[in-house]
Image 1 (tube, rainbow, N blue to C red):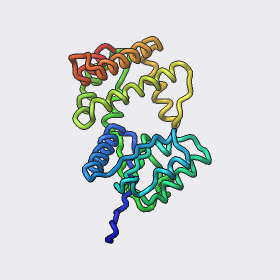
Image 2 (cartoon, rainbow, N blue to C red):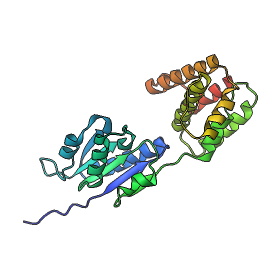
Image 3 (cartoon, rainbow, N blue to C red):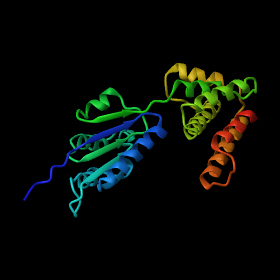
Image 4 (cartoon, rainbow, N blue to C red):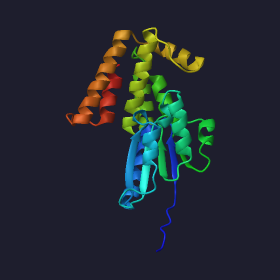
Length: 235
């Protein structure tokens, strides 16, 4: 009886550009399905060492090769369970994909010596656009021009997610909350926040949630980039 040789591949997808990394994840899963592999998707928040051990088997009960996908393993809070899960994953003998919503450090990646790594970064143009956002209406034209320049390289959904994130951070700063990050980021957010009042930011946040709901329920005739155009002009 001839033995079946199974090639083992470990892949890490990480970085703040979650739209691009999600697209790559879908691509890899689709490729695995086309090769008739069984897909096991795991949310790191919902597993322990025993569960992961039971999933890291080369084949299922029917002899089909398995691909295990673990999401946000490195985003777990520091604990013995997290350390044990990472150690077990790093020694995996099955096809494994780690999808991370954050950027991993070189120290984190060093624990996975034999791995294919894809890093998805956010563009400088995207950050430049977010920095132009103001609440005093002084540079609407610049905001729109920079936004459309960003759309040339970035997905509208990513622009939406990052704008929502920016508004939430500005609300936090305006409300006296503490923002994690280096001092220069905090100072930049504080200066940007001075162009808004808190009620204005809360209103923008509400509008963004309404846009999100309409997009998800297909109850809007406008495209997402058009919705963002209107929102920017309303600021």
